[in-house]
Length: 119
Ligand SMILES: [Zn+2]
Image (cartoon, helix red, strand yellow):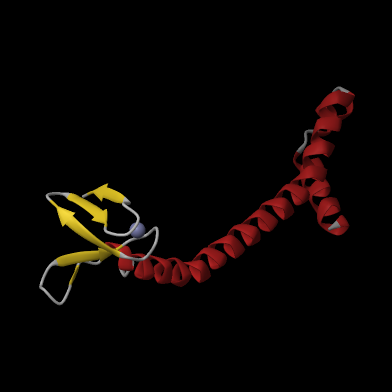
């Protein structure tokens, strides 16, 4: 990286008008040096960010199947599945106690604990 910085400095100096460089304020020279010195670091930092982003992307990709599995299990949420009992009545599993919930209109009510929700 040091040799890279030196190389950039040489190129910048070669591009400069010799007289303006000598006459120029120490500020502009310092700014040039600063830019030249910072550039490799900036590139390096950007590459690091890229790698971290890639890693994050990979992580998300790895997480996706897990999310899908979660979604799949939520689709099969037993409390959301309407079943038929022996008498042919619709019922659902109570999310509170696991007993049967029966529907009255749009309201599902648990026969055991009284938990209800409207669907
Ligand atoms: Zn219940």
